[in-house]
Structure formats: C-alpha cells, structure tokens
Amino acid sequence: MKRTRLKRRGGLGRIAEQLVWLANGLADSGSRVEDRYWDLRLAAALDEALAHSEESALNAALDHLYGTESRAYDELADQIESRAECAAGAFDAHEVVLIAAPVLAWSRYRIPATSIPPAVLANLRVHLQAHVLAKGARLSVADFLFSPDQLPQGYCATAEFAKAIGGAALDDHDLHVDTEGMPETAQFLSDTRYLLAAVAVPHGQALFRWQEADGSRDAARDQWRTQGGACLAPLLPGCATELVLPESYFAASRTADTDSRPYSVRASVAFLATTLETPAANLRAVIAPFWERDLEEYRIGLSVRGREQVVHGVVWPLLGAEDETTDGPAQIEAVLRESGVSDIVTLDHQFPLEYCDDCGAPLYPSAEGEIVHAEMPEGHSEQMPRHLH
Picture 1: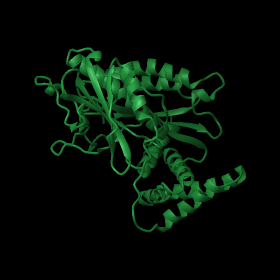
Picture 2: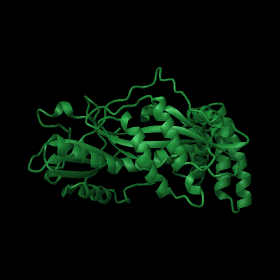
Picture 3: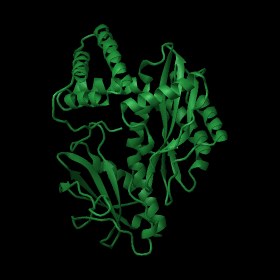
Picture 4: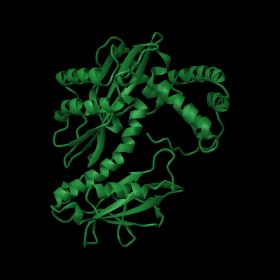
C-alpha cells in the first residue's frame, strides 16, 4: 500500500506528540539495546492508541514526520502496521499475524467479490498450511474474497479485524464474514481481490514455510500459484488471474500494488487485442507523466496504429519513495514490449492530473500531445470496463 501522505495543518495532540517523540528516539538510537527500549515503549503506546481507535492521532503523527524526519516516519509507519496486523498485542502467549493472499485478475466481465463456499475454504486451508505456513501453525481463513473497497479501512479497523480473525486462528477455525452493508465494487478491467487469513504460533516459532530450513519463498509462491490458483479459479469465472505470495497484510498489499502495475498493462493489451481483433503489434502506446504538486503517476494512452483515437488507458501510479528520478517510462516500455507493443511514444511534458468532468475517468495522453478521454470504437464501447481499480 502506498505510504505517500499530504501534510495537514494544525498542532499535534497529546497522543500524536508522544508517538512523534518515541519514533524520533527510535530513529536516533545508536544500539540494539537502546532500540529495544524505544521499541517496547512505542509498541505499548501504539497498542493503546489502536485499542481506543485513535486513528486521527496516528495519522497526525505520520503527517508531522513525513517529508521532514524520514527515518522516524519509516520507523513509526512500520511499527503502526506491525501492531495493527498483529492485533495490537491482544494475544499474550502467541504471535498472531493477519495475512493477505492477493489475486490479480482481469476480465471483460465483472470481477466478483464473493463469499467462499465451505468446500473451497477447506481446500484453501489445506494448501496454505502445506505450502505457505510453517509446520504446526494454526490458521483461520475469512470466507469472503474482498475487493480493495471492502478491506478494513484504516489502522484501527485493521487491528480490530486482526483481533477477530486472530482469535479464530487460535481456535484453528475459519471466520465467517457478515456481508450485510458491505460496499459494492465497480467494474474494472483489471483489479485485485484479497483472501484474508490469520496465522497463530507460540512465541519464537516460525510463521511461514520459508522460515524453515528446507523452505523458500520461491517454492512457496510457485506451489501457491498452482494449488491455490486452482482452488480460487471457480470463484472468478471468466477472469485471467495471477496470485501474489501470501504474507503479512501490509507487505502483501504493497506487493500487490507493485505487481498490479505491469499486470494491468498486460491485461489492457490482451483485452484490446481480443476485443478489437488486432495483434498487439498493431497498437500504439503513448506514455506521459502527470503532476499535481509533485509527479503522481504515469498514464498510458493506447490506440490502434494509424488512428488518432485513444481507445483505452492505463494508470501507472508512483509507489513509496518513487519520484521523477525513478525511470518509470523505461519500466513501462519494457512491459509493453514484452506484451508485443513496439510502437511506443514517451512525452516529456508535465500534464496536469485531470479527469473527465462527466464520468470521473482519467484523461490519457495522445500521440498529438493532448490529454483526451479514452473511447472505444463504435460497436465495442458496451464491452469496455473501466481502468484499473
């Protein structure tokens, strides 16, 4: 998940001030012994803030440190995420961690966010325990495949969810998700779905298969993609999918954000090639940077070679510490060429971060150096899902 923040005006409250002080202390520490001192006190302060739903204080502290005290910001962000996904110290005798198994998907049809039948849930448990988790780890799997809009919103909600599913993991049974009032998910060409689970082990024991002497991340990912992918495929009919390695909630979410960028480019090229019945080599791509105060993202306008009309677009957002010095266009061009697109134009002009006034869709660059609405040719527009979620 992207950590870029916008600083807000106003003074810090008592809780935020304490968190800033502790985070600066940890960032300035000169030894492991001192680290432990600050770690314990920062963890205790964060557990209390999360337990009392002090979301605004957490964000105020992060906003205060962002851009001015980068080391302290990173320390605080890491600690907040860790305490939230570990249920804010709710379980004394065990390590309990909320994990996510993201699924990248694309389809010309609606990508489901759906309840998981008991038989499928049982199979997913088997493969998670066999290929992803350490021997003897207890597990709880939520019986719903979440869209991004349906995930816990904020650190405090994440900690609350982690506590609920963590308690179920200690009992080694799955968690039923009440879907009443859950947000609807719009149709997108390429999107991510999340399988959420919790793993529980006694303090000091391994959580994941790759922590064991004969395990590795690559083997776990390959087995999960094969076995877990076969289990999840019936839940995503008409979708092409790619599974991301399950791991702790925030780390897996950031990996999914990163992996979804090239995936969405490949998905868009494949979609246009099949829908317009034209080879990828017959497409043209125009890459351009889009700015607000800083560079926010690159946008890719796709058209059929020899025609001016932009028929589809892809957003490539900047993540983490990326900025204008990161060679985003080279990364995008490499993915386009791997996808079969060779006619690629990169524009240097700094375009404003603008959207359509009527539908809210991003505007994309054309080969003429303008930003325009992506429109499919007549007769194909009804098949056109929106851009990436």
